[in-house]
Length: 254
Length: 130
Image 1 (cartoon, rainbow over the protein chains, first blue to last red):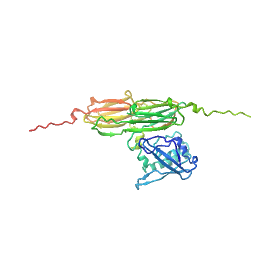
Image 2 (cartoon, rainbow over the protein chains, first blue to last red):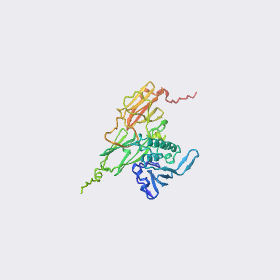
Image 3 (cartoon, chains in turn blue, orange):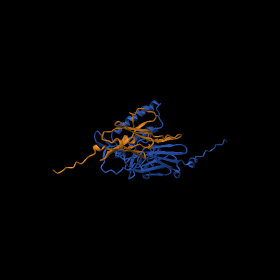
């Protein structure tokens, strides 16, 4: 059994999390000699491990609990189709993962791809109706706070922005490793008024923790973070020396 | 609820758009205590200069302008939220003392205190023994 190393993000008490764009490639059956791989859904309290079984080259079964609303019974497996086409892969997996991957490449112009995408979105909405168990236990459903994150990059650095309205600076903890950034913290509910009668309660509170894996190596020592008006702004320079590793070799004509 | 939680809700009712940005509905908590109503709105990115609270007749409008976070020459790696303005309107009843409304902004959270008018505050009536 092989492990997929990177998980995309961590949720406080949540059971599931995403597969990063990097590990997406690991899912490709060609990288495995055996036909079983293991996915780890990372939570801060415990990790939830799921074994996936490659039924064939393109289909994988995921033993996720899924409730069929019509019969109210749990099904213990679901088939997931893996296709070499990356975008399709994202869509299939997206059902029970947080929606973190916004597609940047589109094949709008291509008639077949757009048809395929339409079919996929049909499947997506179909499966969503089943109330997939991990989704039900997700941070959202429990009314917990999950910050939204934007990540941008250029050749020199990454910029990570997170919306953290109402969180105190001292309650935010940013940790940088060589290839990922962790944002931890807690959004506290004010406790001053005891006899509150709520009319609207749309905001959410609670602790959160997200791990953002980054593609390139970063210089963890040179990271800078600022927090203003509820927006956390982290700048991390990329490691230039690691990029230089690939040296171009000139070829001499004999 | 879950979908709503991940995304901002776009406010499609906003008219008079001058700026070419999207407008979102900020999420609010409204709660009542003995003396006042409190409205707390999450508006990440606004500060005391860019937030606007207006009361016209009995319509309370909260609006916030977010000065952009667009950075040039960067590629988007992934994106979960959009930057835009905020606007939401509420209708107040006569029970609110309009002159004493207080607003504060801290870390992207707007907090409005809407004190109740004297006449509607609960009063204990003394009973005299005859």
